[in-house]
Length: 455
Image (cartoon, rainbow, N blue to C red; front, side, top):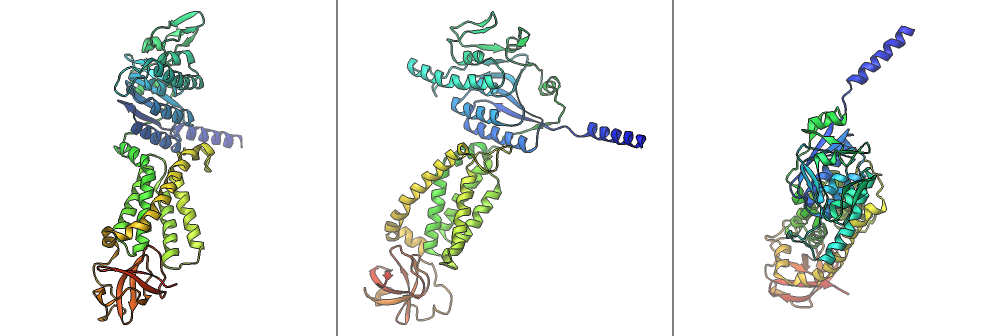
């Protein structure tokens, strides 16, 4: 029995030693820090969390970029559950310094530098003195907070962005006030009171870094897809894309069939969900839920009006999927979004609702009077079916204003109606009229027969 137990222990030990270590994700941050790079970083972090990676390494070489974007990167890095490391090869200037401070450890190439994070205008010029003080005061809080959370000296972080900060470790002055702090690899790794000034060590390469950081997992390089820039614009325009999709569906339901308005709606919704997918906000399953919800709403209106339940379920699915597609959720975060996660999505959804409330009444009142609406609403050829026989009249000249008839199809707002023995293409002023409803002619405008429900 004792030998059997020893054999089991040996097998377990052998299996454990041969088990594959978690991967190490390497995310390059090269060039100017932009919104597109933030989308790329966020996607990489989410993939690393989903894969339960051992670590994420930022392969950094940047002179800086947009400080506001750097704060978003900082929030993402500070919030991830995967250990993070920055490898500076060769620059982590300005906004790049904040991103590096937001990772748990920093390694540097033999010839590299970090610091000099003074904010400047978009043209590269110095800001006016008053504005400079306000911006430095605001963003220095991010630098100190990120540094403090990851165990770096907050004074060093502030000295990167403010030339008024002195850095002392014990009795040793690392940097006097008067200039912005920039540290070389040798200065950042110098030991003062038994602790490095900032960086954990100097590494010749990413593989060398893995050895010095004690990481054994295989390297997995994450590359930008080229769609991150597109994702920036699509997510920025999300309220307008949703508005275009809603208006397209509204016009299409009024017109019937599937025409230009339906095509525009489909494109808008596809771009909205594609942008969310590329930006790392949601997967395609959210778009599928949206399609199911939209189908239920359309079926409620067209196939079985008045049943209510399918329409309510559809509205719930559509609203939930649209909101979910805008929520920035990481794999380790709770499935039910928190208040902070909902703030921006609810704001964007609110913008869409307000724009829709303005656009729909305007379209209802004015679009039916335009030639564009006639182009998308009236059929190009006579619809097939027994009700469209030789009695169909091509011209409305035989009708008079005030004539009474019956709707043959649902008018939303265009469709077919019978007046006497003849069948005509008609259009309302925007209202929906059910089949078999009594109607009368309000106006005859060229080839347009405008009708309304009889009182």
